[in-house]
Each structure stands twice: as structure tokens, then as C-alpha cells.
Length: 312
Image (cartoon, rainbow, N blue to C red):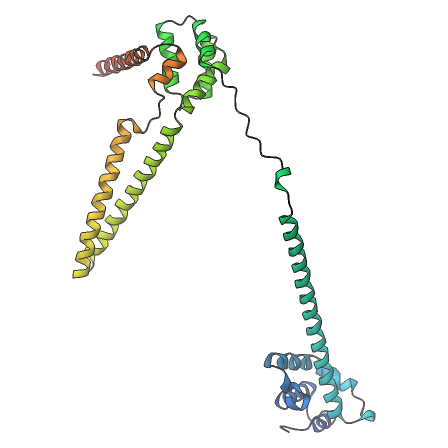
């Protein structure tokens, strides 16, 4: 055996040559060096370390528990370490059994739920109901309501411009027009809604154009930054080839970005119902709708020229 015998260590402690802390350290060191004596060679390093830690915590109590009338200290220490080993094994066994039971319980619950899911009869489930939509008033009824107002030239112009701006008009503006002409709000809301429904395809195309414009602008800035970094680095054949390639890509995306911007400036950005849609709702021909719109444009131009003349 290595180091001093535990019996000798107890005699040194009883004679006062070593204190309690030294006695504990020597006992733990003895067990750690001679672990095969206690059967700890059958377990891994982590298990042995746990036993040593437990012995280190409880070693001061061993002195008070030991009774020399029943045998020597070495035998008592051997039995005590064996009891620590058995206690550790039991606790590990309990943990293992609990984990196994928990796993089996989870598996059973999963199998039960899986069986229930597969046996659900989805035909008996209530199908979702579509959201309530406002009542759609027929165009004929709307036309009759407008005729009953006996609208004058300027009044028809207001209604046509409002319908042309149906995608952007607010509830407050709609209510003001209805109060001004004593027109039923549900009729005017129905006209606005029918104009908006005719713009769904245009709205989708505009969103796609937005995405393409933003994509082109992002890559225009990205390739500009890459080209700038390449020009600041050392000149090499590889950098020259990459720079030429990125300049070509940057030029392509810049052209796309500017082309889409011009398209937005020329009206692609705005959503307006067709003249035919407005004419059908108003109960007039398309030429009349175009006439009222052109008249409104001329009036706006005359007002702008008048303002410019006063300011000059």
C-alpha cells in the first residue's frame, strides 16, 4: 500500500501529532491512491471522483463514528467506503429507472396522440367561413341613384375625379362628398369598392415593379462598393478581371433602376381605374369621362399659371 496505514493515521491523530484537517487529507489521499482495494477499479474516473468527494465531506464524522471495540480503523474505513459506493450506485439506479419510466411514458403518450390524430374524421369538421363582404350594389341601381341627383357639369366632374382617385381617397373625403350632394354613403362606398377591385391586377404588377426597382438599386450600390474596394487594392490580373465583370453587372442594374424610376415618374406609380370602369358606374360614355378629366386638367393648369403670374 502507498503512504501510511489508516490505523497509523488514527494513532497520529489521537496523539495530537496531526489535526483533523490533516487526518482528512491523508485518509482521502490514501483511498485515492489505493482505490483498487475498495473495488473502485471497476468504475470510471468520474464515479471514483464522486466517491472521494463524498468521503472528503464526511471524513470528519468518521472519527466520531469509529468504535475500536468492534475492529481496527482500516476495516471500518473499508466498510464505510463500500457503503458510499452502494449509496452512489442506488442513486444512479433510481435516476436511471426514473428516466426510463419517463421515456416510456412519453412514448406511450406520443403513440396515443398519433393514433388519435390518424383517426380524426376531418369531414365532420366545420369548414371555415369566408369573411363578411359588403353588399355589392348593381351598377344599374347606382346609375339610377346618380340620375336622381340631377348632377350638373361641375358635380359630375367631382364624382369622376373621386372615382379615379378611389385607391387613395379617404373615408373623410367620401363622407364629405356624400353630405355635400346628399348621396347615400353605401352607394358611394360600393362605387369606390368596385373601382378598387378592378385595380387588383395593377396593384400586384406595381408591387412587382417596386421589388425589381429596389433589387436593381441594391445591386447598383453593392457593385459600386465592390468596385471601389478592388480599385483601392493592389493591381493584379485577378482584380482586373473581377473589376471588369462587376462594372458590367453594375451598369446593367443601374439601367434597370433608372428605367423603372422613369416609369414611376410617368404614371406607373399611380393606380387609377380605367375610363371604362368609371363610365359604367356613372352611366355615361367613355368620351364624356375623358372630357371631364381633360377639363379638370386645364383648370388646374390655368390656376397654376395664375399663381405663377402673381408671384412674378
